[in-house]
Image (cartoon, rainbow, N blue to C red):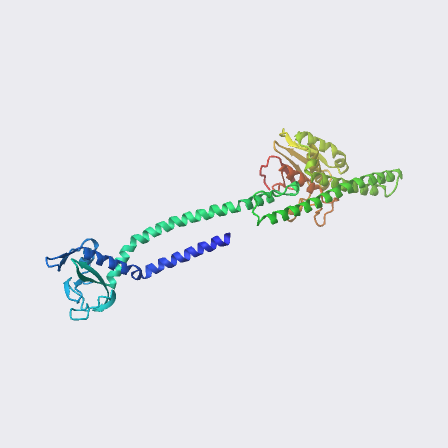
Length: 444
């Protein structure tokens, strides 16, 4: 369809340009003969005859009079009898007009002569008056013929240009709306495909109203989504199953180590078990927050969740000799969110801040009407690492802190699910993570 339309446009354009160019370059070959014939016919209509039936005079009217007055030596005429005798003629006859003594050929309807270096076209028109045969010959120079034709063509070209412009505009609009209508189903498919993300892998492209040429592509895309959804489901199921299966053995191992009593390696073994338990718990969290159906949104008090996080991490902070304080406590707006997911998000941020802060440091939490910010006193994040910090299992090179690289990825997943903004505020020393609940743009 598109190829045919483009071919039609090109063909019409080329033909139109060819016709206009041909008329513009040599219009007399198309219209000069017609104009000379028309002028001869009008002269015959204005001929006057005497009582004996001989032509006596001719009345030049309209444009014939104008052209004759402006170019007296460029337009000539004469009336002859069948024997070639000139009965009536204009003044200043061209020198090469056949004289009365020359052979007169009434069958020569049109021929060319040259007079004083100028070319003329002579046309013979037969007519009768009162039963007698006569012939009118007109001689129009090439120059005058071109002037007459161009003068006649000027309004024609203007009209054609206007009509062509209007037609082209209408044609372009028609093509635009035609293509717009043709591509509307494709745009719907494209928009639907763009809305599909890991959070809604169950969505599929609608096949209603899709052109038959595009339907196989949409069906193949839906098939690919089916396989992707199944693979993602299997992955999440594996994470959850592995985490659940590992929690019980880790609990038993911890119990056995504690029952051994004092041991030089007991503290180290318990620390390793706690770290493994933390990794397992994070695997559970990443599996849970990746599925929308796991979220149970309700009106949630942000301040209460922050206090709960501080209590939960109290012992861990005491162990590292780090204090957790709320520096600014505004009355935050109630959120429509899953309380457990918000707790995991804030807990991971505060826990990371505690881990990277030195002894005797203070981790501060700022609560505003629409955001929560967590500030640590660690060494800060290398700007080159900022694009990667929210990726799963990513850990900075040379990182001396324990962890699997899942904490911030979990935070990002939760924030992205609710449309919150999670970023690092680089305008302050150390590191400051900010969660904006209403989509406000912060200083990043």
